Image (cartoon, rainbow, N blue to C red; front, side, top):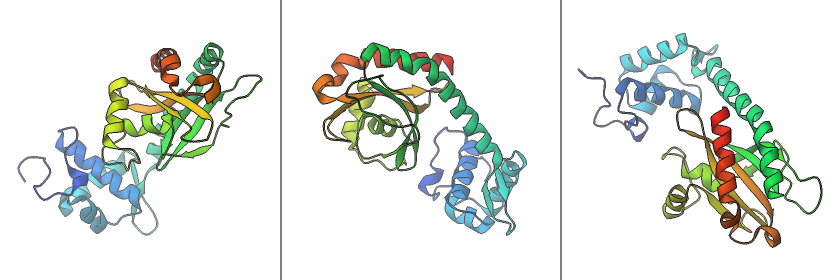
Length: 240
């Protein structure tokens, strides 16, 4: 092929996203190897790329530590990916320690920060009120991506190919408002409101949430706390 673009019969995983052919193909190779360890034939089958192209990209990604080969010669995600992810996560958690306590003081409710991991969202930081009835979510908790305002936010700005448990209309509404709310979805008697947190490239990497008893937060907690939540999300983004 004369130009570095996806072939007409390429599978959906190679549909151009950035419009930069070599970048989209490289990402497709990374995703293919992330599914499970892959031989060159596996990479070709999963991406639809010609053998020579898949090999050239895999070797280049291996050189940069983004892919590695195991004892059987199969490609799998490399250490550089984990290092990059860890550095971003550490910066996010460190920044959250400066922002979440202030939001807790403003709202008087529990505050959490979630990142998505597959079909779950993981609480990576939290700030709890010192006393009173509250919605406690310990750091490290894995909650399903099927309910709750935090799940809606992470789903609304996820890769279009990622599985979603919410309707397209519901997610479009979240993107239009810029935040999500829920009442009694994740847990009976609990309400929450969440907003996206973006990295310097504008990608949504987390959801910041305020949660508490419906009796205090109401069934439309966004009306009360969305503005403060968005300011906190902005503060996180400025400091990352």
